[in-house]
Image (tube, rainbow, N blue to C red):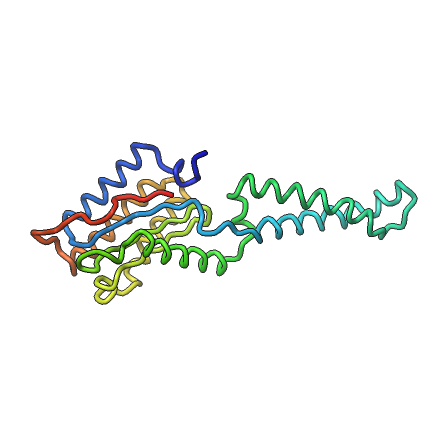
Length: 216
């Protein structure tokens, strides 16, 4: 079964993203790599939170009337558990079947930390630190969280502050929310290329050392 990331772009859209990378790299020696991942973490705590919240609400509301049907005390623990457990289990199963729902049961700081750590992990696992001039730059997009993160190697970060990538990140995240993800990513790639061009213009012996698009 294809992951969320593999289904995110059509074949034509993937081609458009690769072409955007080619255009950007024609004017800079920087190596731009956009990467899509389905999610930065499995977030096992999200289904637990959702299940506990839904099950508690249902059990609290229904315990008294259900207990009364069987001539039991309105606060009977076994009735409460009899309602709580199946609702909790059902919600947990649904959340794992539809992982996009997990986002609604996660905290912003929690999401930001996981996406940042996943982006740094991808930067090294995909070898972006191995370029000749230490000029690899990763445009990391994590779909479940609707988050993007840009990481530049030391050759770039020594000259260009990270704040300069924030506008490109906003373009990507806004594009995802507006269902214009391909156009947004292509625009962000163009913006990154424009920034890099000023400090890292194209060289006569420039080589394409990295992937034009990574999806996993």
